[in-house]
Amino acid sequence: MPPPNLPTLRWGVIATGMISSWFVKDLVLDRPDAKAHHTIEAIGSSSQEKGQTFAQEYCPHESTTIYGSYEEVYTDPSVDIVYIGTPHAFHLRNCLDAIAHGKHVLCEKAFTLNASQAREVFAAAKDRGVFVMEAMWIRFHPLTRALQVKIHEDNVIGRVQRVFCDFSLDMDIDSLPDDSRLKNPALGAGSLLDIGIYSLTWALLAADPNVGGKAHVPGILASQKLSNGADVATAAILGYPSGIQAIVTSSLSFATAPQFCRIEGTEGFIIVQGPGTSAPERFTVHLKTPSGDTAAEGITFSFNKPGMGFYWEADAVAVDISEGRIENDIMPWAETIRVLEILDEIRRQGGARYDCD
Ligand SMILES: NC(=O)C1=CN([C@@H]2O[C@H](COP(=O)(O)OP(=O)(O)OC[C@H]3O[C@@H](n4cnc5c(N)ncnc54)[C@H](OP(=O)(O)O)[C@@H]3O)[C@@H](O)[C@H]2O)C=CC1
Ligand SMILES: O=C1OC[C@@H](O)[C@H](O)[C@H]1O
Image (cartoon, rainbow, N blue to C red):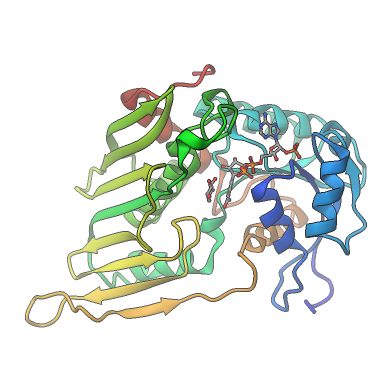
């Protein structure tokens, strides 16, 4: 049991797809080291029946009200915060609707289709005085903080020189229906917004300890492979003023090897790995030996956890809200905008377009 006197956050979840199921399952886990209590007050779905089935499967012990619409979640007075697990193209509308009803918001990545839409959401949140955050959960993983300390505070690999990060999944895209969120540009399809955003995130975290307006702005060189207007593969090089280069890739045609990220420095390198770039489990530090070679055997730091780990971002949100903040300092609004500005520029060069651009 977690200690008493923790903040309690009452969630309304909209959409009952894959990520909502992962998120809700994690929120209802019993965790001795929880920093907040979470209740699933409401679920909104395109169909009430779908919502019922979801609740029975993923949060059967909660007293959850099931709605056959998203609007009823926004107007439910027992909901403090709306979790948005819809396809990318709906995030703008869902965020604005929830904010208009005075709800706090945690919205899945990619936060919106482009930076301009994100600015619109944050302006509305500021006006209304509600908390909003992009659910880029890996930034809240203890592994991420430990990695940043190793790179940027302990300087274990010396000065960072290059970062390589890939997130590719074999989605067998041709076999998916045309209305799949992974295939239809009208739903925000494309490898870059779905999974390339993780490759970019690891690169940004490794190349620079700062976020948002304090972070350095890299130059960008990008190429995309398009199919029916959506990018099925993206490759981008970020060039920093310091000389650091980051090579960031994504593809929907084959699976990344578990060693998804390599961070090279003047004194060694670090490999980050896990079953997917969105699911880090450990990193290994390989240092140069006195002879100048890099040690083949490194030191590995592993991070075990109950469930999947989405509760870390949820706890951070609960603590922020209970202390009166409207943005989070690990994933502030300016960082979401910075990420989207980079994605916008990659798409501008690569050719993937959304109607809102
Ligand atoms: N953080 C992470 O690790 C992950 C994040 N994501 C992110 O979560 C979001 C959703 O992805 P995912 O859960 O995989 O998507 P799914 O396709 O599994 O689910 C999306 C849900 O959105 C709702 N929806 C509303 N309108 C539509 C529409 N026109 N077409 C399809 N679905 C619609 C549906 O719920 P209903 O019918 O109940 O309204 C549907 O079940 C994306 O932003 C994605 O990038 C995804 C996977 C992992
Ligand atoms: O965020 C994600 O991570 C896992 C992938 O399976 C999914 O497509 C993506 O949205």
